[in-house]
Image 1 (tube, rainbow, N blue to C red):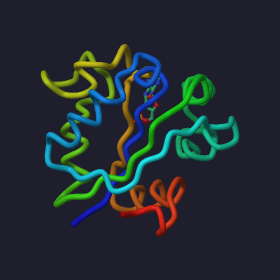
Image 2 (cartoon, helix red, strand yellow; image 1 turned 90 degrees about the vertical axis):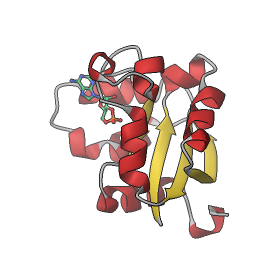
Image 3 (cartoon, rainbow, N blue to C red; image 1 turned 120 degrees about the vertical axis):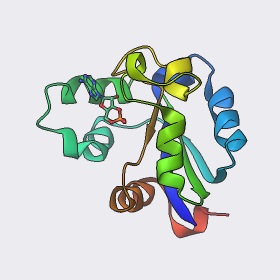
Length: 137
Ligand code: CMP
């Protein structure tokens, strides 16, 4: 069993796509074991994406991620990190495979509907960013 963090981003939440995206997650067999809706502050978004702080898109990414509420879930299942990355599709929706969340719902490489952790270490850190042990059920 593995855990990963998913974020339904402000673009998708704003288009009332939260339910459709969570349905795809559950339909894939991954279990939602914790869930929060939260409006990130600038400092929280900066901290969450600190790994990208030298990138040219960092400021814009932080603005986007604070532009409205996000819906954060902890997902659990065998090989959950890779399975969720496959379900999301490529970061750029133009390169995402048919049927993936980003192909279906993302607008562009920044407004790309969802985030998912990319490795066990980042999953552990990102889960701890949003959830305490007591939140998992
Ligand atoms: P995510 O998987 O959350 O990881 C970092 C985010 O930065 C990414 O999804 C996109 O929202 C954004 N991003 C990545 N590459 C670019 C880019 N070239 N231009 C703008 N935003 C990007």
